[in-house]
Length: 424
Image (cartoon, rainbow, N blue to C red):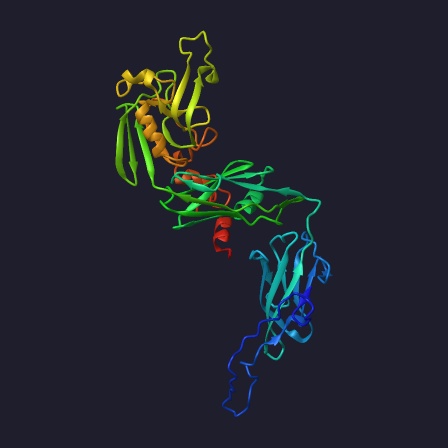
């Protein structure tokens, strides 16, 4: 532990509040203690300990709770705040009599904590003090790493943010801790939430699509935090994204037309063909995954061998990928007679080479393509691309460890605490 009375230590001196001096007189003519006296430096009158051992020059065991006590004639503690070097607050409780403060939240490993105390001595005089202490590193512990996606860059307004964990996190209390440390900030501000796809993957999306021209920052404050016995959070690289225009395409398998709009205005309508019987295109909203100017498409990739009448091996140009299983929007000159007339593809959305090239150049990853009236299965929310927008907001929140409604109705109490927790 270091306090402001020792100039060789790196802790700051207790900040003194300068208050004008006043004199008070009672009706009987006597005088009272000057309540507005300058606060004294309380740092030397406050003790910090962990697990019953004083927190001196040796780092504190992050597994232990920290206690801060008023010593000697210092009277009582009136306020205590504890933050680490990253601005994370350490939760704690102040005893009703002001004799001690005890941490209730987990300490981060390898961190430097600053303790700011307000006190009042037995004469009623206020004190202020600042102390610091270090916690030991978790060198032998396993690390929980977080990798955010997609890569930094500009995306469409439908692009979800992803978080890949290096180790599985299953228990509800561990998920709440991890989720609360994953921060997504957007300018303009949006309402959004994380959704646990599985034990190692989370997706984040707003309630509605991102605003156009938004600046998005994603970061983790999990470093040094104990997730469970033997597992601590590791540092993660911050992610910065931007959004472009709101580009949406609606492909109607009944009318066999695709309509593309930009920022709410229709910019092009094109005749198309979608999946035929047995190969119906998936219904629902998909997020553009990428673009490939040339792809060799072979039916063997979806289990159709050379002896089948449905076998194909084709050079495909201007292909915009919608699913990992191989659903694209692409040029299909071999079926030009069916564009706008019949659904004859094996699941992709085919169009003329000219229209496919236009579409390829008009969209970017994160833009939105919605298929309707295909008679196919619904696009899965996860596992085959980004079908996140096919979940209602209520269903999306059910996948959050912080924002899922409590069983008895209303917001989960951990969500309330997360919203109220100060962040820097």
